[in-house]
Image 1 (cartoon, helix red, strand yellow):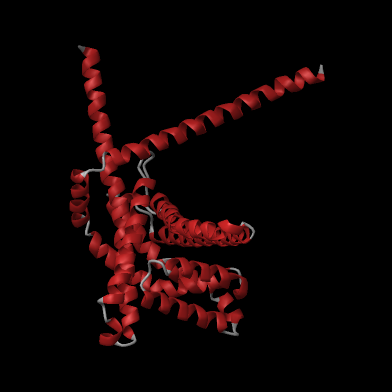
Image 2: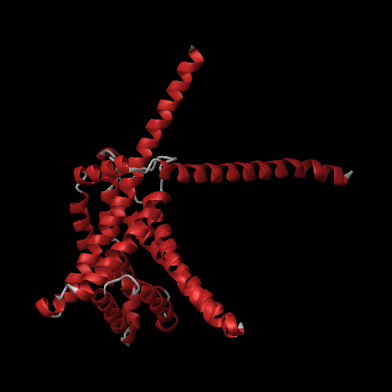
Length: 332
């Protein structure tokens, strides 16, 4: 009797879980289909429309504003990262892993400037002062994302009446800053642990040691692209004041990550072989290189979301036209 009652009580729960699982699978399938369809609509026409929209929305100018705020926010952001845990020595390993991955694409002068500041902070004996300043550093670091959120609102053509008020936008920017920092640290910590595991396996693999290490080195760059894609997608999803369900996110994030890595690598090669900034500007050359790199990174971030909007609108138009043709066919 008791077993029968328990079965009757558990039946609705099981059915509810099954229904939720079915909806989740259906949603994932729908997202995967839209992801593939996005690249089916990505052609020269939509790329040109994206370029035109970038000019109309003043994305280069907005990227300059973002780069300026990012320049002012970068060192407080590093300070926030180094004080997030409060113990510099364990966190230094993760930060070194981050700079090690960035060294593959980031200009040397820009990376040197960042590392110098991080080393100066880590070497300081007054850690209590840095811990107390964590909130201020985080607030200052969020200025870059505040500018990015305003630019994303313009890309999505959100009316001013529907935009977030200043205080709400700043709170969201702080949340996005914390989320982006945690996301990057978690991903890089995972990569660091994976690197240790791979090296230990390689040490016990005998003749396959060099092959495993070479394979892991080849996989490192795609992992960096994956981390940047997730970070860009996170900003695209929660940055705008309003997000329409069904709006593409990850396709533009993936393309932006690839563009960011490619442009950073090309800019790194240019600075190394052709751009004699240190000879012309002296020690200010590193600051100029960092500013230019932040500008390119900001522009790529905005172009990725503009691509999402442009191709997304094209997908909606094609779907509406197909539905209209189907309705006319049914009526006839």
